[in-house]
Amino acid sequence: MAEGDGVERLVAGRYRLLRRLGAGGMGRVWLAYDQILDCEVALKELALPVDVPEEQLGTRIARARVEARHAARLRSHPHVATVHDVVEENGLPWIVMGFMPGAKDLAEVVRDHGPLSPSDTARIGVAVLDALMAGHRVGILHRDVKPANILLTGPGAQTPGGAAGGHVLLTDYGISLQPDSGETRLTTTSGFIGTPGFLAPERSRGVAPSPASDLFSLGATLYYAVEGSGPFDRPTPYETLSALLFEEPPPPTRAGDLGAVLAGLMAKDPEQRMGSDEAMRTLAGLTATPGAEPRVEKPAVPEGETTPLPEEQPASRPPPGAPPAEEGPSPAPPPPRPRHRWSAKVPSGRVLRAIAAALLLIGGGIWAGVTLLASPDTKAPKTDVPPYGDQVALTRELKPGNCVSASWPEERFKDPPELKIVDCKTYPDGQVLDVNATTSLDDARANGQGICRGLLRDTTNSMVNVQSYALVPSEAGWDNGVRNTACLLFGKTVGLYGPVGDYRKYGEQIFVENSSIGDCYNLKKLEENNYAHLLVDCKQPHELQGLGYVKAPESMRFESWDSMYDLCVKRYGSYKSPTRDLYAWNHAENTWNQGFRFVMCLLAMREEGQKLPPGSAPPAPSPVNVEPMGAR
Image (cartoon, rainbow, N blue to C red; front, side):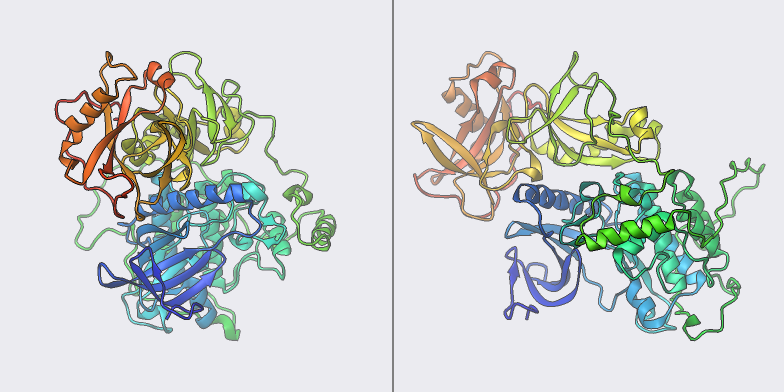
């Protein structure tokens, strides 16, 4: 039985909920039975944010769906919890993940059995950092590294001193319907959002997430594992946030040599924070090896006992039997990184900040802005610095889902366009479908276009006459804290005529320009011989389904509907049957005259009033003797 429902519930017509495994700020996790593959899976039901305007909810849902699909790209990584699928139920995405019987998260293990040893903590750090680095290399950030998002499996997760064979998995890669910190400054009128004790300080100030912010959260998480409490734990979220921004954590008493890594990862200035390569080398050197347990002095207090974990081969250690590395001249040592020392001293202005925090609490818990607590030397982002340069002329950073109008100075895609953020319903020229965080501006300039092509490949391959475009921060924008390259999709010859991909909503009117292969539609009559195509869920009966596009010859006129139909029959004639037929669809004569000479071929029932059954049409056959499409 599904806990709280009283009856078994079927999600997406396939996954039968059995019982609830857990719940948190981002939703509930269920044990479910996959009726098609005959196996148990974990199903994550994402929580709806509170007090979110209706017009913003769709964007957040679409973004969560996109991020879950990105997380699925890391399914082969040994330390990333596998995301198998993203399904939709009642308009909300559900994440289908592998089920790991007996797994416990790091927060549970420490809470139930006490803090871990430095070597076990370092081993967890190696595994999680390896997963983070794999994501960073392909432009995927985690955004919420914390003890509750690290799973430990095997006997070692159940009892202290468990047998060898445990495993470390990082879960919840960017999967959330909650806003980014830059959208609401961490809170809404109804309370605190997020996990402030493990959040990077720059994120609490509204700076976009970056690889460095994931590393800070990892450092705070490892501090919790080895010390048994968070580095900024305070009685209230606001006091925790104040400590995160302005105080150093208490010096660790159990960490031993691990303490230097924790201090380096938790440097408040991201420019001074320990990098992932250095952290990996240091953590790997601290993992347990037979007969070489790091020596750590432990205070004689009852809670000083640690929970041993099963041994696991560090990701960076060479496999058994590997040949030794060739000897050669030692490379020049890297330039020294500033060493971070522990200090519990609170900076000056503590009384002023305490008063500010008290005012926030008295005011009903509404976060009026982190600047109330900012120290005098804090570098707040300048609002008058164009993040992408004067030519682009935007005054704020682009976010996934933003639609834009574009004015290209000369040839399209050659030089950056002048952009304006517009309503997606006002026939935009392009839309931001993703962002990619990089560690340097040079890397963004050199690799941004290629990375964006990869991130948007599924969408561009399902549409026609579109192209991805990477908008890289300017030097001034980078210096002002903008770390994300915006990955936009533009029409090659005309605008998109509306949102694309997962940012479209069922029931909205769709045009040829923003349609995708496989879309399903119902028709709404507007006037005589004129209909609107409304996007619908293919799992429901529908009137039309898009098979693909054909490009018309230059000589074909817009009114030549019979000729367009013949193109579709020539390409997709195998779909015709005694009960089904093909239709040709084009949108508007003005886009045709601008060069958008593409026809979408649709499948429909022959008899008027009948609908296609639920499900997708089989894959389209290869094109034969038809001018090639322009989408690739």
